[in-house]
Length: 149
Length: 414
Ligand SMILES: Cc1ncc(COP(=O)(O)O)c(C=O)c1O
Image (cartoon, rainbow over all chains, first blue to last red; front, side, top):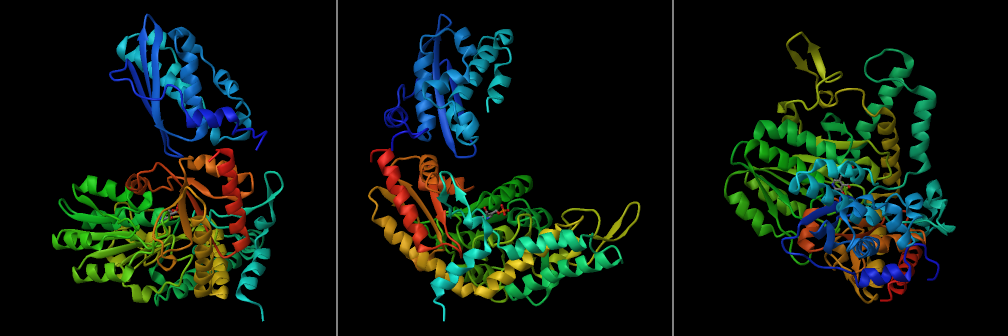
């Protein structure tokens, strides 16, 4: 089927062969999240060195959209500074996969797409607040994460 | 004379939504009936008729409208009682649905009767609504919650029930008459007779059985029985709790307020008679009245005919689905032991992706955990696809589903 607005070659390919799939033992950030509607779960692992994301992996169960978004997100943030990642916008992620339309067309599937970004924002928030005791830098990332979709 | 298949085909005209086109002008194939069924004009019209012609609160006024609405409301109670073969319609309590019915029993009966160390037995294939209320109760009372596991066929392992009963601590056994995921029909007679021999109360979650098969409550012999109107052509927001009068009379009330009282003084209140003691506040009058039409509609077709029609569809669907490589079917392979519910997975394609792709062909199925995460854990999956049938479904629609599934294989290059 050509021209499918969701199931593009790229999404199918990522869902079959996700990038950065796996686990980091004793990661600096480990964030678990689930989508209560469909039972999708992901675990996101990040290591931070020099204020940069030196290593990132994820694992879990999810649909093709969820897996593709996790893959692309982890690819996009690797090597970025925490400040950059804090500002990371959902449109950046969605447009990378051509999924911007989901915001309007599918209030259900947008949750699959953005579970990864929501976990990332929550994870970084807890890293600042709990590990670095720096709630100023954490800002309102938690609210941003909660209101992502 | 019309053939039975034609007769079923013919009733589609009563369901306006079935004429609808979805997505790219595709005919709607509605296979999400275990979640909720569509409503016939007879039900929709009865609800409008109430609002247009005799809308009024019930039980409390003497004017003409109130008399008409009270009569129509109470008439439904009688229709439900007859439908289930119950002699005393005062044993029929209207609730919001199965969930509220089970919670009512857990709260009002459970709190008075379950003590520390007691056991409540449920099963691995329950809907969350028949698990969570019992978790809340057993945690509060320091009682225990135990599960009857299922075997590889998706059937209950009843020897575990014997073990639980032999402890002498079981207060209640609660299980679904038919699993909403596997379609397995529970061996009701066996379970009830074991429990009766042990003097243990039985609750049946009939949300998936009453809509699809003849149920004779007079013969079953359970103590509590709960189901939802919206899964049997009725409106949302109406369900039924039935319990034996002796039990209901001894039970504490659930919600306090208007209608459930006999006399209220500053510091004490006496309860109204059954069933009103359990129906506090203004009930869902319009939808209860609409629900009567749903039951009449089903009875006109005949519950045995409905069961046979669904059995035909299920057999056909199972046969056709078995032919698709990479498709995993859950539950018993014997159609007679199951209702018209088929859960499946397709290779390792996530059910949400399957659901979205076949939705483009107009096919509505359910993808997810179906409010049965305990069962998902057992099956070792996070979700399944579920197609569930009802009176208006046809073999041609199953062909559409099969073709749509072949599309999934194409998209995912399986
Ligand atoms: C077996 C079973 N029990 C309980 C329920 C809950 O019913 P309701 O949502 O109408 O309260 C359902 C419906 O999803 C069900 O299938």
